[in-house]
Length: 448
Image 1 (cartoon, rainbow, N blue to C red):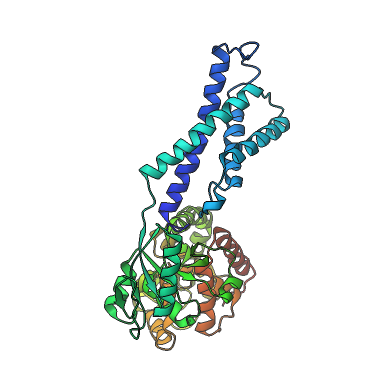
Image 2: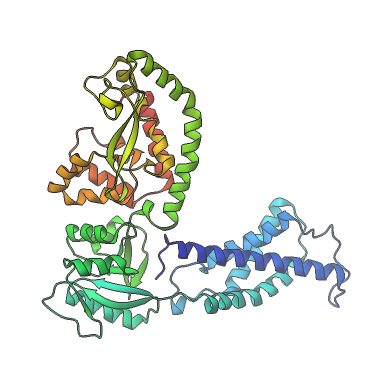
């Protein structure tokens, strides 16, 4: 099973859409050239260039309507049931209607023989193209471990056998050792075993088939798997909380439990956004950075920048840059005691955080993410709240959902809920909203 957030799913989708676009483009070009140069017995004359030009507008009209018609007809659906297979005839009728509407809106000439010719070529080329992709790039079944007790595993195996899902290859199951599954699937052991945890971490896919499992066991499995997470057989309560289903075990829906901004294509999008927007912000803020550095130097003659040791992605400490806002410590590597006159202003408007743009460009941080904590603070929190380590699955951020939505002195458990919500429900739109909220809070002088 290929997850929508995976690079393979994205590449396959791009390949299919690109091929469909080229089919429509090629069909349009072929029909127009034939009509211009080849006399046909059922036409009155050759097609004048002015009546059906082959330009960008014509290509976008025909190819765009073809892709839209395929999407509306179900050719890009993740799951195709045997009784609900998309029909090329339906897609072609929709395309003809879309081309007619688009031609009328753009006042483009539309020769009927060209439209019919394009539809005929597409009717032959599309099945051939899809068959070629299926043969040359078949969807490889993923080695999968089922997690749950024996009864739930047996039910899941029976459902998979009934649907003959070739995208899933069950190689083992993991769960309590009290009862075994006699279905030709080996028992890997208990998820609490270090060797089993390592196997769960390395296997291509994990499906948690216990819908009513405790929240703690779900979080623990996410900690084992890392950002790519796992698939969960949804319970009734889960169905209330999510509107997107990734796949199915039989007829039962699967949902994805993963860190949206730390896995697959979305992780690439987030990093590219950090580099692009971070560079732009650094250039825009350059005059303010220079003035701030001068003000700090003139205030007490101490160092301008300090580095604080913080916990980053994967639990690896890194040096986080800040403008110094307290009295100069020995060596200038950390805060001293007492806030300086300039430092009070920097803290109020959060200007002291601007040098962290350097950490973003270096890859230690992101523009948006859980705020990084000191190692000693993390150690104290994790002793009482082990799930706090889940924040380390992504890069820490300059701005964060917990900082925007929670109180400054909120308990770590509350901030963790905000951070997990951000991590698992990430979107580029959410990042932009949180950045704007953070900038608004800074301009309002609500910093500490």
